[in-house]
Amino acid sequence: MARNEYYNDDGTTDKEQCTRCGDAFLADHDDRLHCGRCGYTEWK
Image (cartoon, rainbow, N blue to C red):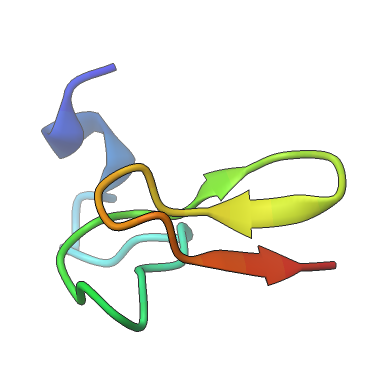
């Protein structure tokens, strides 16, 4: 999926961004949110 497909027409997004990187989106897994760029993980 292209990065521009994550954004709505008004420029907002529903995806969470990484608190460490600030630019990467967090992947939504069953038990965690994970950043593929830096490895930051938030457990649900």
